Length: 133
Image 1: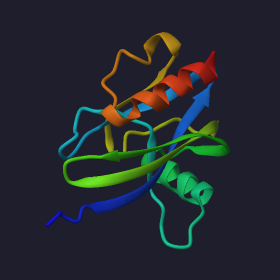
Image 2 (image 1 turned 45 degrees about the vertical axis):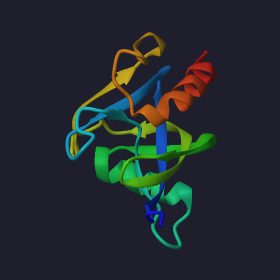
Image 3 (image 1 turned 90 degrees about the horizontal axis):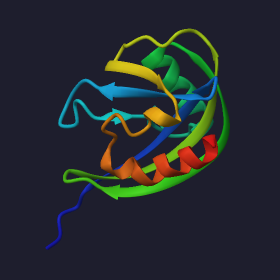
């Protein structure tokens, strides 16, 4: 009998400012030390855009606009299945605060591969790299 795995539906933002994208290092759980795009779960009845604006405000204390969908991914982790939609976002105001992450920085093209991203993000990183060129 196959095990039923938890399904997580998330949105994330590739937050752009001056040709750089904001990356954040997870500070907790099984994936502490892994870099990610800021985002989170979509609540019932919430649009992707509303969820992304809310999550980025909660986690970083900044305001963004959501522009376009860059890509989606489905990935099986050991404990759950994740569906993620990555959106291009533009930084509007505020300076990122480390509320739930151990580190964060604005990464240029030359910096994208200097941090350890979630394994599932590899294809989205390639799409982001092409978008930024």
